[in-house]
Length: 168
Image (cartoon, rainbow, N blue to C red; front, side, top):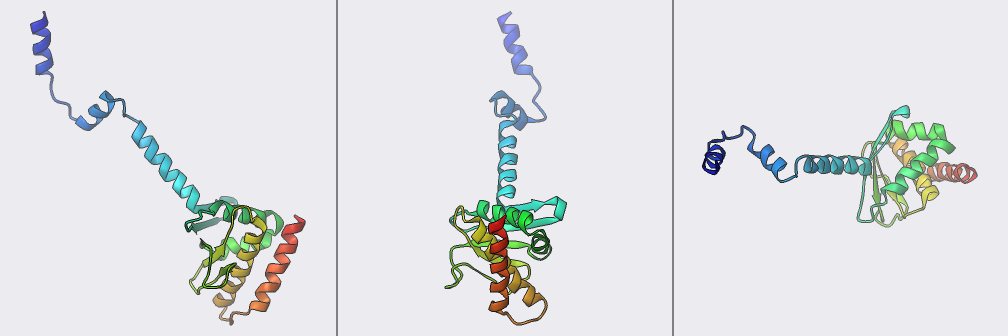
């Protein structure tokens, strides 16, 4: 009987799916694909802000401080405190880059790239980040409309935003 069993094992046909069989044999099976998919979902969630009810899809480029949560929270604050400004952000901004500095402009900057603004963030500074988003949106809109960049206009808009956000 032992000789017959051994000959059966030797004559077993080769699998058409050796990689799958290896994974199943070593209990890896579904773990790696699930981890890979989870990593992709985490990264997309970390680097994007989406709000399908407003058609909002904004990529968030991060720096070493990884303050994407603050930017997302600032967008949510704008959504509730200033819905019309939030709609404008969603319609015109496609990328928010978080940074700690914009060549001496510590709060944020607009560098003339269509749909892209830079926002200096710090963990927990949601209202300040929302104010900076409004300020840099103002510069983006000025550029889109072919007007010169007017700091006074943008400071008025960001001051108004901060008042509205602080009351919310």
